[in-house]
Length: 530
Image (cartoon, rainbow, N blue to C red; front, side):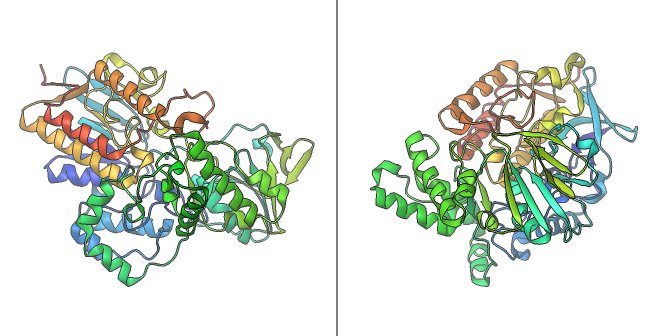
């Protein structure tokens, strides 16, 4: 029997295996892909890159690695991030602990022995004391069920499962459905690569210029020479990133209208998601939020030549309630003669035919169809496995009314099961690598505590989980995040229970996790066999 099974070989799974090995634990990793990388292994669509700056979106645990690795761009593209992850796997000899091309299909908890029996799709089973889900928040692709999709004669692609060998689109009419993060990144590049691009937009998107560029040697050195202080400063930020762009926390209405525009313009020129930090009340006060939203709508009308197209591209929901996107020449792309915008928000897609997409009475003919429709976020991958806890209770039953965890780490009735960056933790509202490291280190310390005290199980109490779910919702309800249908709520997946899943605020969350440990793992039941 192994000490632990780790599911997933992305940033979370690799670091988890590294930490467990440092404790002398035996560990078996499983990865559905053919190699390491997680989301950066699968997401190879044109234009894919991170929206957290590369000097921050990287591991903190290895000081030498921080000094040796040199990022080339402000926002690293997918190939560079994947190269980095492969380098880490080689550097720490982590691949040997994973079985690749293998999907975990289920696991059941043995109450008599306090261990998990994990089943893989190759028919094998592994027993382990602990089961750790490092499956990522954005790993299960979401493809809408549109009538006629099986009749389409061309090629169907999903941004989250792009062909690894790439694809030549130079003579093709391409249609893309979806204008979330992957769509916004892909659309400008697809427009350059294809004969004609048709964008099917259901919801207009707020997107901020990335202002991506190459990194200069002196700015790289400035960070590397003070990495400990730089990391500590970032970890004190609400999202565990963006230290260089923090500002005085002032209300939009502490400023004159001219001063508000000046601050928004300054941040627009800087680029990036920290644009939303212009005012302290931008995500809590509807009036302040509208100031920011109207500024962005004005920018769209400045960039897009055709007024009707600019109107269609201008969002009217709360800015920030859906994940803020950053782009390179997104709105500029709609000035091209070979790009068409189709509004499917007011007139939904009726069907997909053999030759294209029918909207109303018109078929928009395409040769290649791209779904940029995102993921079944945060819970999708875990719930697709048949996980059974005490008494054989399925996790799908436990989470029927929405995910119920304690700290986003543990689920009642599922002892010795840990979820890295699970629902109820800051996760997708943060620099994911920072959140991952904090979770991995907490889990490793917990396992070490159990082993050193002769304990074999840890389980969140129902009372602690209920109180935590209430807390997460109370914090979210103080903001405008739950005010629109977003994947934060699971609203992009038909039939999924609407629950706001991430917890705003990284530093208070870390403090809470530390307090739980200091108070003898308050909210958990610890036990030994027999």
